[in-house]
Image (cartoon, rainbow, N blue to C red; front, side, top):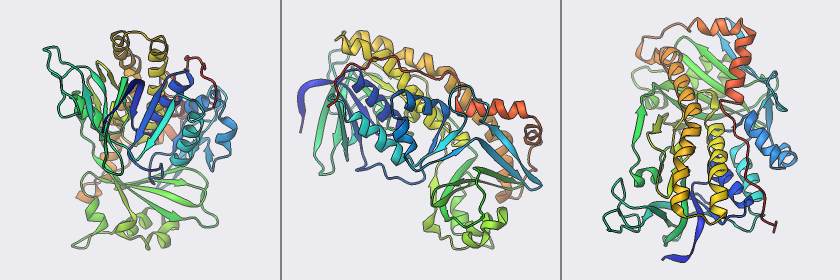
Length: 434
C-alpha cells in the first residue's frame, strides 16, 4: 500500500525523546510532520528516565513546565557515590547556572506522553504508533537508476525520499517526505538502510536492570554504589527502586543462571547493599532486563534527504545518563537549521546542504561526552566489574579526590546536567492551535 499524497515536509522514524521533540518543534513552526513509532505506546520499562537541566529549560520554554511538574517525578540536586568506607557527592547540581539546579527523574513514558499530547495540538503533526520503519525510499541515483521500497540503499542509491513502514496489521506503507530523520535508536534500521558508516568502540560492561520494592527508611538519593568487584546504580522512584547492576560484557547469563558455585544476581546485590539483601533474594532471572551497552557514532550523520540524530547517530553508554539530553539537543539543533527553509518551500537540495551543519554543530558535545565515557569505562568500570574473572582491582583513587574537592563536584554537575553547547529553539511558532 502506498500513500502517494503530496510529500510531507518531514517524516521521523522513532518516537523516543529525539523524534518526539523534533516533531513537536517542526509542527510548531507550521510544517507537516509525521512521527512513526513501532510500539503501540511508550510503556517500556528500564529506559533512561533522567531529565537534565538543559532539557528542563527547554520544557519550560515550550510552556510545558507546569504540566511537567504535575508528572510523578523526583528531583535530585546531587549524585552520590557510596564506597565501602563511606559516601560522598560525585556531581553537585545545586550551583548550576540558570533556573534549574537539579535533574529530574521522570518515567520516560510520562514525558513522551506529555510532549506528544502537546504536539498533537498543532495541525501539521501526526503520530502513528504501531508503525515500524523497515526501509527507505530512494529517488534516482546519479547514474539514473531508481531504487524504491527500501529494497536497496547504501552509498550508491539516490536521494532519500521517505520511508517504508509496516503497521500492526502487516500492511506496508510508503511515507514520502522532503526530509527524513532517523531517530530510531541504537539499533537504527534507518542508518543501516542508508549505508552510513559507523565507528564502534568496545565496552567492558552490560547492565542488568530490575525493580525492588521500597521500604520505610530507605535512602532518598540517587546512589552509585561501588566496591572492589561490584557496582550498582540505585534510583529511587515513586513506588519502587530501579536498580542497575553492572556486569562484565557478555557475562550476564552467569549471574542469572549461575553454575559451579557462582553467585546469583540477588545475592550479589545483597552483598553490595546489605539493606536490600532480603528484597534482593526474591529476584528471579525473569525479573532482570539486559541492556547490551554500546558506544558508537556515525562517521557521517547525513546523506541527501536524510539525517540521523540521537542514538541513531551516536549510541551512548549509560554512564551519567546523558543520552536523552544529547538526543534532545540534537533535535533542537536540527529544527533550528531546517525549519525555516522547509517552511519557505526551498529546493530540497538547499535543505540537504544544511544537514551536515547539524553534525558539525553537535560534533564537539558528542566527541567530548563519548571520550569521557570511554575513560570511565577503562579507568573505573572495567577494573571494578572484573571480579567475575577473579581479577578485581581496588576502587580508583581519583574518586576519593572528587569526594574531597567541591569545585570538581560542581564541574561534573555542570557536565552531566547541562553538557556542552546546550541548544535553544529559534524556530518561530507560526501554526494555529487546533
